[in-house]
Length: 174
Image: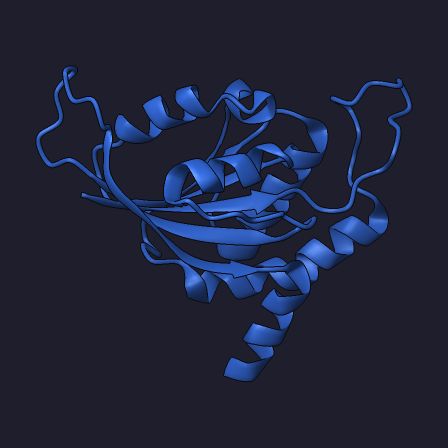
């Protein structure tokens, strides 16, 4: 069974939240505008257009990015996972391998974790700029058991787009 995993870094966020916490840093007006303008171009790049989920870090800037993404691609299903905000790759992997149907999963998160996860998935060294996305095709074992050491049979890198490149790619198609 195949999954498409698209790692997406949150948009431009304020340097400091009103309450001083990292958790509550929100997107700037510019960050929101750029995401609203550029994320709709990702819709054409989705492998499983009828089966899309958005997984997001619970940190405010990621939640806001996930909501903008959901509106842009027409997906209302957003699931919030602490392991994304914490950069816990093992928990991410455990959630991925529990999937039972082919789908596209957007993972809205943060650096340096997304870059580390790209390397863990498919040996890709990627420094995610704000608003950038990278896609991977993940093949899960057809008959998985708890004893299976390798939970993913194969993962391959598909593409990487900065926020600005999303817009350029979309305009070329028009």
